[in-house]
Image (cartoon, rainbow, N blue to C red; front, side, top):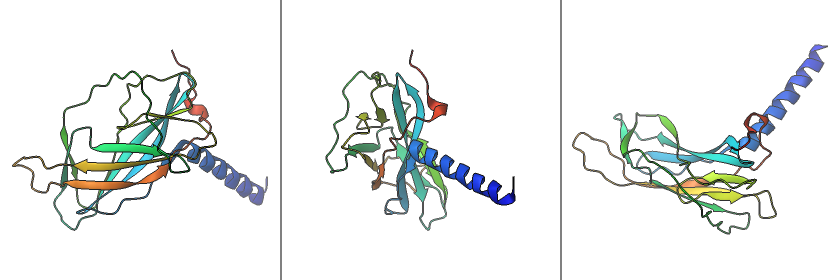
Length: 198
């Protein structure tokens, strides 16, 4: 195989891999800064269950302030409120169903100067229907979506934190971030995540 053919095959393989990645995850734009904090949404494919594609939501926070001391945020597992709309801008109703969730106690998030933090905000514990399409799971949901005439769908959210009295905290952030919407990846389930339910 000549060098030119090898390069062509390599470029094609990278393109296929990139397309598969686009089908399985997506990242939104950074929000406008509020007192030195920015946020954005990330959606990533989890193993499918009962023939339903599971999409987990992550929140990314970035300390873009000029202060050298770490920024601290009081987190109580309900700081995000999500919403999904279709291509026409119509809001999609959340799914009703059984729920079994245990949340950890509230805790502090600390972001050093010029740092980023990504963490999962999907709850899990929702009842998953058979062959339900794709389930997007976070506070405000979950939502069941399919590749239909209403697609594409978009997830947006609001992140908020209130002041919490703690004498040991010197640089506490409080406020609200409007997180830009991100298109929900509804491509084919990746081969690595094709599983069967119980």
